[in-house]
Length: 211
Image (cartoon, rainbow, N blue to C red; front, side, top):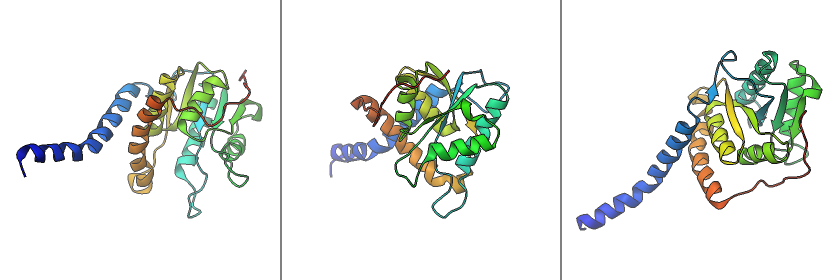
């Protein structure tokens, strides 16, 4: 095998790794200074968007990602760093309803029901960010999720015309959250594919103004 062919093969094999690296680096760099872990340091926004996830894992155990997002949203509201909460998640079947489940737990934790709005069509992070602007009329918002998720959401939001910062819910240990954090690398690659293809949310619907 000639050196030229060997180099070509090596280049082809390296493309997926370079794509993962560049996508990850771009999103991390873009979100630098836009996510916060301290309630005292984060600027105030009218609305905090809680990105949905399942309350329980497949084995029936509590999902720490879920519980920590609920805690983070309550902290922001109690500190007067948000006035309203928009819960955006999957409502794919009658047996699975992220927004309604999260709303119940937010109300139980002390956030008034009339301060919570539900986006039942937040099937993906892209859908959640675009719909926050186009359906719920937001120009700016605080995204509430784990840091790695916030970074991706902020990048998408800004590219879609929504100014966003992130409040970082407590993360999950690498051992417990390895699958989620591993998938995040590929989700970040898909961000650029979606932007290139001008992918739109699955649904839009009537406007719902938060005020």
